[in-house]
Image (cartoon, rainbow, N blue to C red; front, top):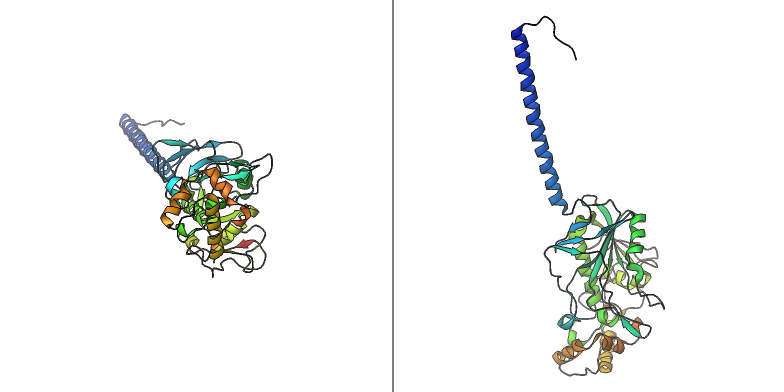
Length: 348
């Protein structure tokens, strides 16, 4: 600092007034800047739809609270469709209802029913998904999105089936790919692939579940820090048939941008489950379950009244089920994704 020497009283008065005016203007500008910053942060928070602590994200159904650890942010048990139970069994998935407040997403949803060691494990109310991100990823990060289908891994004694979608493995995938990872639970076996004249153009309920989940991810990816325009569909080896079917289904067009097909690219010569065979197997299923009815309405009602255990008991070998070709969702002539072995395929 320095002092003006030899200044008159009038000059000192003018200088004092100038300093006061500059100080007043500085305070005013600081106040404006503070207000603008606060408004910008508030707008960003509204756009992000997530809590500053990164544990809360607002989806189009409502807010969910997950958990943040050193390795990942994890949100579990988020419903992407209504429970396929009662009259909704063996129907295409319906939208999941929304909720008020904040839903606890720190525990996984039920797994879909599967036979295991002579008993049935899982719950038909099972159309839930999990979202895992790197720990510091939030809205605006625009990370690539990986949608993982477990496909119904064969049961192994001593551990539950299809555990490829659990949060621990999703955490590793999110770390390696620096991506938002979504693991999807969908209907399995007869619950997801039973074809029967009573259900019309049927047999692809699991395919429709997967597409409902892909629609959900498209709508909500940004809220979790993902880019809905960079979505890869992949999964366990047992999900290969589902991934190839999605590549061929006109209903899945524009729902993902890339696939990693386990075991290599889909093959036009691979065995397919065609509608006539699937309908024959469905009538055999109904006979084993005691639902032999000439009237399709009565047959559908009888089949939907069966308990979960009764459906599993009438199902027979699990490998007989899979996507059904020759249907509206999956035309017999569909060839999308067919090609030489390689694994990386873009939807055609």
